Figure 1 (tube, helix red, strand yellow):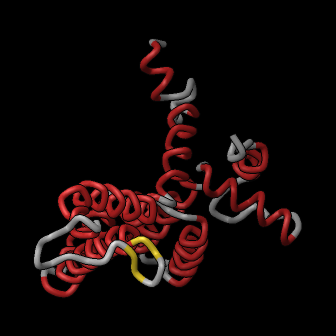
Figure 2 (tube, one colour):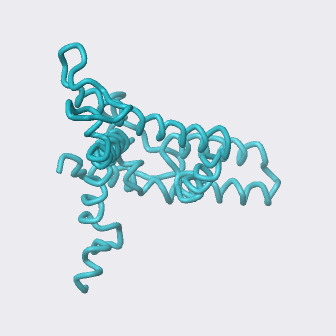
Figure 3 (cartoon, helix red, strand yellow):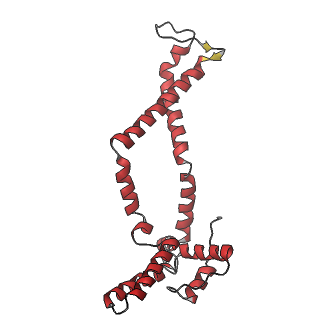
Length: 206
């Protein structure tokens, strides 16, 4: 196996642990990205604009539009910087309002986000897996004699069985074992799959 393949895929063909570790750290950084980004934008633009208006807050200002060098005993510099920062934040809020209320671009963004989410398009989370398998089993029992519906019910059950070998199902089984006691072997899977789910180790603390 080449170095590139070892980074991208594990030996058994599953996604590489290295890639998953990297994406987990990236996800952690993203959690504060919105707030940190706003503060960085506001601070950067404030410091870029300040040199052009600073002279209006100095005692040497002789123009018509000048401010005292102190306001209530506090240097006017602080009020000037705060005013610029709040103006930048107001501009960001205005753009956000236009994005939301005028152009409604969030609808297209959400559409693309859902299209790229495997658990909305073709994969199954444990809760949807259980509901889908339950409905498929009910359909199979109620459609005896209807070969077409029986085949579709089997297809749904095979779909659930396929994703019962995934990490999300393993996490669910281990949590169910912890909270509810021993998890039974469900009708759409088998004992071997349940044992694989219990044996899977996670590295979330890395």
